[in-house]
Length: 132
Image (tube, rainbow, N blue to C red; front, side):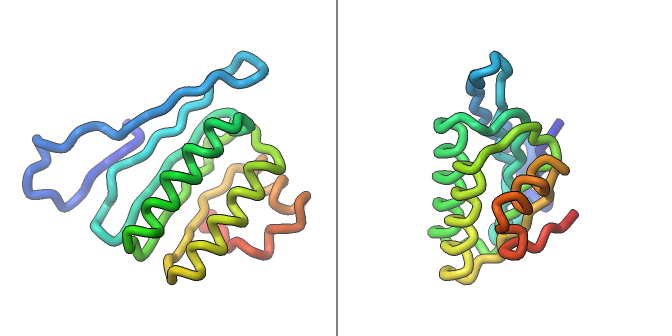
């Protein structure tokens, strides 16, 4: 299972994370899974697959903005299983970095080699401190 909720008093009442699936232009399905928060201050969002679709990018952006605006101290974006991204996705990350910095939220990235390559290609790698 890709999500885990820790330090709960009522674990039996925890519901599974929301998961959205989008069909990519090459016929592959991308899955955006949102894990439950490890604590009230931290949110972990795991993404996998092909993230070149506008709907997938917008879903990630909205989810992160909600967490940033609702006072989370730390948002972790796990991109270790992301296969494809593009410049729109990188622009979204830059926007999220700026919003998080302005709100005092730590934005932590766990990157796949593909995402790391795109960050360097777009000359935005210096804006992020990857955890992996």
